[in-house]
Length: 232
Length: 249
Image 1 (cartoon, one colour):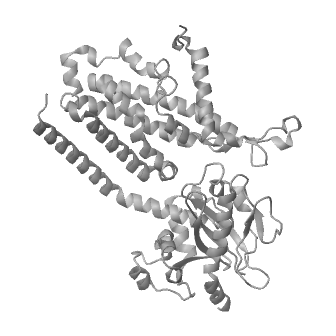
Image 2 (cartoon, helix red, strand yellow; image 1 turned 90 degrees about the vertical axis):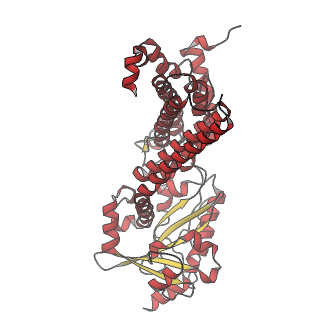
Image 3 (tube, helix red, strand yellow; image 1 turned 90 degrees about the horizontal axis):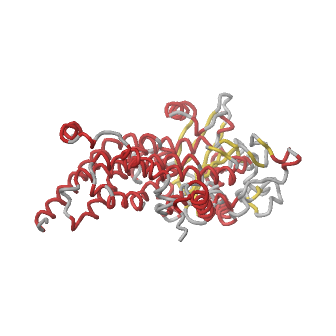
């Protein structure tokens, strides 16, 4: 399919400025979580640990990319009256494929994530990109857009998970780093000037993700990309 | 514009294609899924005797799990009166495998108490010493909790425990599964009182008062901890007749 496209129209398959923008925009100025404020539900639920967040991020990138690609390939034949339902079927099918694959390949992650994998179907980011982008753009550009948005979501997910896992449990990827007790690499109870430190139980609970995301949005707008703030 | 007929044909073809793909994939991966489920359940059983075998259950490969089960573990099933149940009876009860590992504790917990089946795993170590593993199931705060309890040869002392849950809060109730240090507390506790009655191991909010029979609760997870307490008392109580017949032999 792609080869035919190259012969027809060269610009559709290249990787120029416009294509790079499709990949990088969702990381910064059009980030799904911090700018569009989509996919918050799953960002709260799966960010208790980096391990879960990593699997979730990979799964969303895969689903988002392929859902965009398939929808874009079908975009001229999808009847407008039922396009939402068709999009939903595509997403649901891909999510089921991800779930079946995880269950066969990474069973432990599947056990921990099972409910949330299913919830990718309801993730507004995927549906939003299909409706706003894939229905009106070529398959190649849609694929890039899907990957970009998946990664944009994944980065924030990992950032939130890092903060929550480190300050909540004193662990990174399950390795015990800091906390009270000899299990931890840095036992705060044995270091005099640090004995006040203990891990914050609130960070493990869902509300903390809300605070962390809020702070990330603030940092993003206040320091990283000031253009996002509407000064008027 | 598409006509109604075109729309119906499009949706029909699309859903058929998706259905065929998913059904094919599900069938192709089913043996692998079932193997994974079985290994996961076996790892949970081995987790209760981690210390005895000097292993870390979660790091075992599929082959290692099967190997340990084949060489060191004997499976038995009993009814509520403590009588052994034969393989044919287990199959008749709806469990194709006919072994203790085939028994679905959730299904059993829905039966009337007198009709339940009790799986038991006997680990015989190199020196011939036995450790018995009993399965228990109960309720946490949000959903089911269950576990495997390893018991020393004296049938009075806990040798190790492993718990799992369907939906306890991460960081609070879920600690019954995630917190290894908390689970280690159970080792060496007695679940039988001085008169020989099975009392379970008490999980006490605010700290154990009788260290021989009790362990500390989990702060912030009182209801889950109470669930564990209740599950141990009731679940191990079911094994009373089994324990009696084991003591005689």
